[in-house]
Amino acid sequence: MIKRRFLTISAVVVITALLVILAPLLIVVSLLASIFPNFRTAPHSLAFIYWFVICEWIGLARFVWVYTLYRNKPVFLQRLRDIQFWWAQALFDLGKWVFELKIEVRGNDALKGRCAILLSRHTSMADTVLPLLYFGKARVESLRYVLKQELQYFPCLDIGGNLLPNVFVDRSGADSATAVAAVSELVATAGDEESVLIYPEGTRFTQAKHDALGEKRPQLREQLERWPSLLPLRLGGVSAMLANNPGKDLVFLAHVGFEGSANVHDLLGGGWLRQRVILQFWRIPYADIPKGDATEFLFSEWDKMQGVVNELKAELELI
Image (cartoon, rainbow, N blue to C red; front, side):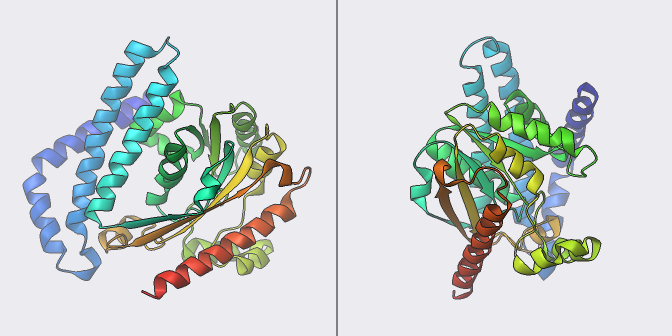
């Protein structure tokens, strides 16, 4: 961990120096590149990169300050969560302004009630903050995350994510038993004022990944045909959550509008520009969650996820 953080923070130092030194050149190049359709939002993306680095430094400074002053005090976790909310909100607000995003939230009734296990669709780098801001922050409560371990290469996510009760998992499946055990404990130990988030697809959806999965794992082709806009559920983590659920409801989050922004190339090409993003929540009470094998129940809800995505996509296409 120490070695990783030394390397990642050193990388941020170098990147920051390069961004400062090369700022005039990068601005000119991005403006010239924006003439071409494939790079039309290069200036927008450059502004976002600079802001991301600024937020990393502010976040790191705030973590040091909070750790120094509050680490042995009852408010320590709350101060850390304040930084988490600030970091996500600052990045999203800048992205929303620069790319002129329009956000709509539906299913507000699902935001009311007890804390929940939240299962969200995953299509983009941008949608990782949607559950935190539009569920956790909207309800003024903590949200535990199941995260991919690669995100620890971002210093703020690494430090904040490990100080707070989250789990970083290896998506390769090399040690799935350990990952399932960690996810189980994350849910089982969550307090009455804490919700827990997992992306049940395990990775961002892209059509290329969808097609490749069908070639690599023929046994999943029926599911892939059933869910053309989703990846199949990774049942290990979700089933472990339900088996160790201390009494939380289930909340699902479907969203559309970020499908064209799965990677940096999409970002440069205008995949986020003037996007209308619609979020749809729905809630399943704890009493209605089947006990034992929940596979059919989860598949049924994933059918609903596909149906909601279809409806919202059709609505976007009408504009």
